[in-house]
Image (cartoon, rainbow, N blue to C red; front, side, top):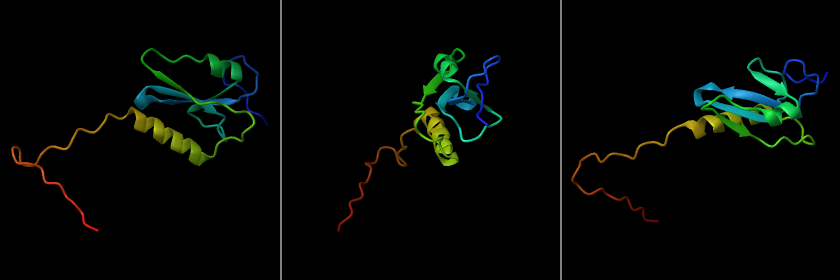
Length: 110
């Protein structure tokens, strides 16, 4: 059975999945997930294209190709990891252990 759009009153078939990454204030709209998840929302083409996010949130829109099969669970996990990584701050540069002394450079010979 085909899944329907999650928007109230819409009976159109779902073609995309909306997932919120609350920790990063990001909404991700991508290809239809292989199965319905409790914290994601299936959307039709109309609602996926018109989606807006709350103020201060980002929307990541992945191209939805209706000729491709739905992504695997591994693909979706990789996407979620990429979104989380993009939201992390850059690490601070390494601090000198002994301030005032020149830093040693390691040269390896072959």
